[in-house]
Image (cartoon, rainbow, N blue to C red; front, side, top):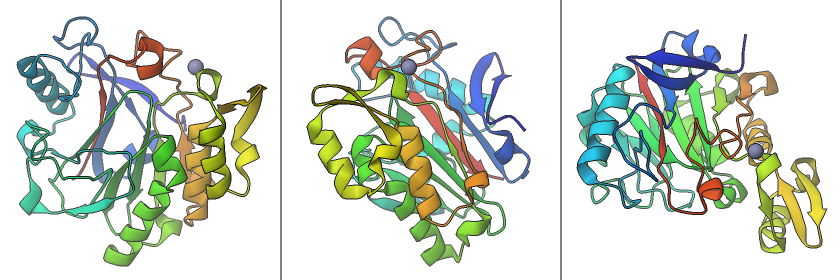
Length: 272
Ligand SMILES: [Zn+2]
């Protein structure tokens, strides 16, 4: 089984995970930048409302992306994503929060968990790590947004803990996928980041490489895989797409590659 597939739905390309598709329990995908209506530097399928793009264009892009995955765009639920570690349990009462405005996105939330079929979760990215988690036994789905801060806060593990505590999930049953994010090839960090990493992981050297004086290349995808294994997932059930957003600028938005202003891709998942 491939770690990921680049699939076309309604003319839009998405990264999907065969491990998840095979369960038959979710609709899911990670959008690319192609096939939308936004102009440079948001060209063209920008799904981020907070990045300075034309509002109507973003809403039209979100509708296009959601519909391609057979998700109802108005029902999508998103957090405000503050690079924290707050995990929110999403129910039917949250439908549409953050779908059309950031002002009603779940405040301060970087991870979403639901056990309700028909409640689509969404989160947005340009280099940070999208972590998809699915318990196909208990039928619980989660998305966690992990930049370097979320990674050192171990947000993916905290998400699994909420799944376990709230819905009696067994981490041994859970599947996880690490979507496109900035790769170790393109992600150089300074001592400030490394010091936080050292505090969070005693095996931090496993996903860093010295690249200069007080400089390191950091592998956020590998760090999040380690976090998920610490949370009790079987290593074989944690797949990493290993797709670098900065290396594939024609396919993905990359905050680093663009030097700041750019669009956002979306991670979307809905229990069937
Ligand atoms: Zn790269």
